[in-house]
Image (tube, rainbow, N blue to C red; front, side):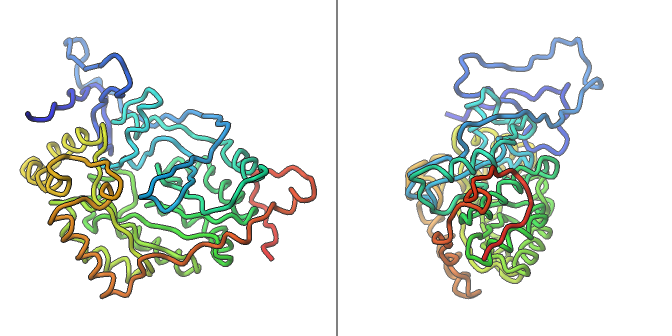
Length: 372
């Protein structure tokens, strides 16, 4: 039985530089919606879909997990949704919990959390809190374009720096260079490391897959800038897409190593829930002649399915094709002298900032406090 196609996109809404053009209904909705042309509004009257940002006031910002596949047990995301719009993003289904579509809504209807820094400081100061590395960017990119205006991620970094709390970062955004001043201070105490996501060196393919993310060459320059400041950097070779980007494994790893990346981590394409039909729709639009071949290659690494959520296999896949990719990555690690992991972050420096110890309220400020 062939997969059910997505409903057609509304031609009266122009989505420029967006990976998804459709709006599949959230899976928790009891109603489904489908655009139907009634002939009253001609396509030439189409309106451009623009970014819309709303505000959330969370009571808690640290998310906890017990996944054996992850190297962290806590994370923080300053934003919900991501304007980078990567078509393969495994976080798209989280928009369904908000009653929004994992399609175009995920890229255009964003939720900012401006109270995140203050709430984080409160959570770190709770009696009984036990320090361990906090993952920043595990779901959506903390340095996506809206961060240039909102500066929530920078304020979060200030809190982490002032509390001397270790942080492990994942991003594909060049905007992180703005915050090298804070990250370098933290790295000097072993409190910060950054992972830069890169799946292809093909600028055209990257623009189609990740329409509002920096180009691959720009990300390589970001790696170099971070390393020049003494910040540990790992390559996040993710996702490796069978039949589409897997032939670039060696080239990507070489380029990132030359830029200064010290460690390399990788994962296969994941297509959970609504991501699978969105990805199939994107393939059919962008490269119809290759679409079925790519999907066959994807299924070959997932036991014949489009996705496998089983712990231990969801990141690396299974079968001969997945094993071959794993061997190629391991060979390049040895050839290029990559570390499999960066050194452990420092969890012993954690303590309240000066103002807290003096009984004064702390704010979201860039004021420098002593690290020594």
